[in-house]
Amino acid sequence: MDYRKLRKNIKKDYSGFPKVRVALLSDQSPQYPAQSIRAMAYEYRIDAEIYEAPFDSMEAEALDPASGLYAFAPDITVLLPAAEKIRARYYETPPDEREGFAGREASRLLSIADRVTSASGTNVAMCNILETDDGIYGSYAASYSLSLLSVLRSANRLLADGAASRPALGIIDIASLAAEFGISNARDERMYYLSGCAFSQEFLFLAMDRAVSYISALRGGVKKCLVTDLDNTLWGGAVGDVGTANIRLGESGIGKAYADLQAWIRELSRRGIAVCVCSKNDERAAKEPFSAHPAMKLGLDDIAVFKANWHDKAKNIREIADALNIGTDSMVFIDDNPAERGSVRAQLPEVAVPELPADAAQVLPFLQSQNFFETVSLSGEDARRTEMYRDAGRRESAKDSAASLEDYLRGLDMRCAIEPFGEYSIPRVAQLTQRTNQFNLRTVRYSESDIKAFAEDASCVTMSVSLKDAYGGYGIIGAAILRGNNAPAACIGSGGSGASGRSYGSRALFLDTWLMSCRAVKRGVEEFFFNHMVTTAKALGYERIVAEYIPTAKNAPSKDILPNMGFEPAGEGDSKMSSEGDATQWELLLDSYMPKPTFIKEEAALGCETKG
Image (tube, rainbow, N blue to C red; front, side, top):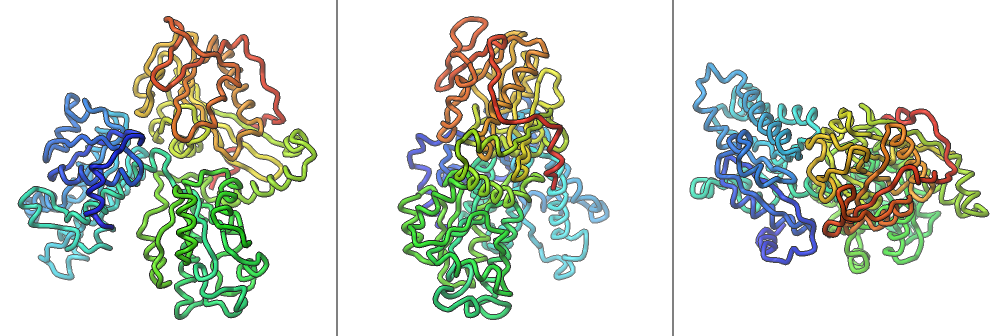
């Protein structure tokens, strides 16, 4: 990472990038971290507007409801504690009072995060603490619980444990980043004494890159798929030339480097990343090592889509994206051949194509350092994702062989279950709001705590929809939140605009969120789901549903869903909602709604079937 070049990003044109309001609270000088966040945001196509809280004012800003932090109204808050400040408090604490010091420090930071989350309704990204050793106890510091090193390590462990029970809090692990980078390289004591910033400039860019990566993931900027070459990428040699028995792969020499890379990729598949193959090869020869070579870590069951042919790789990658129903901007492509990498970059600039080291031994550590697969949450369905993608391939084969679309849909034997948000579904619904970009009317991102607040509020109607068919279960693939006029402001969340702040009458529900996974659209699920929304709204005594479409760079596929469901543009007046900026407002009179026909049957709750 060349921080000198990255620093020039600050002067570049950010117009056209979505704006994100980022507040920075730190007990060290915020100027340089704020500049690093701004510069790194350009790499993620984000226009980050930064609020720099005054120096050393983390607690004061968080606790004061009239502080600049809350006046700024951030979309996310970054907390950046300094190990030097903690070290100073540690030294001022008498040795006989240091028992529990780590717990007090962790509690202090978690309390700040809790206050910011509750007062602003936004997520918090907290950088953990650099684990520095002061040399007082030598090697004994690692096992002596009251040494500064052990105290800092304990505090970080307590922060991680605290974040596990706080869905709106994410930990940016700069401690492990500094361990890889070198603690002495990460710190700049001279800069600390002169300017109040304890980090070296190069490390600061690395650390804030992790923070911006987290922010991007919160906004749906996640990578969902790894596409990999085979020859000289997953194994050494060209299998079509040397045969399966002679490829370099095993438990010794350079063959172990390839085996270790495969083991890491298998872990990505187990986590829910779609692993796909794109190789210029004969398909039979390309698949043979997966079943015949004893050192293979990856099996064909780990591969969501397998493309081995002589076509242009960019064409194959587009076809893989179509098969998975994902955007090419959510894909990472690895290939040992510089020409192939260059060709894909030229034709698909939105695909992440890392410049792999020429030395196969360096490929795995390089990929591990790139943090391509950032995530802010996991759900039970992630572990089944590769299986779901393979099921999707079988569905496509059935579609190709069906006599008509009606015959195909009828033959799927689709069954849906719709239920209010509950303990199992809340993490998955939050994940959908964070990751779904295409079928998403308003693209408002919510945390688990936000979704829980909706679920618990009597003014809100919440629904998750699960789907299964003859080929397998999709799990939870959609969600809707309809707000009555009495829903509290805390339920509105931080990402909305337009209609979310209006009054729309006691007999109307506002469709705050309607989103669907792309894996399930255009099969009648959206119609089935909306039929249920209307039936529920009428049963509760409502007369209208009002809705809003906020266009983004990615949600054009949902542009027509409201008029297709019978909504009419809303006009001016006290009882209606008007256009506001690029957003458009819509209204549906429930008595005029005609249920849409589908080939889907309603069934009892299905969510438990996909619980991991």
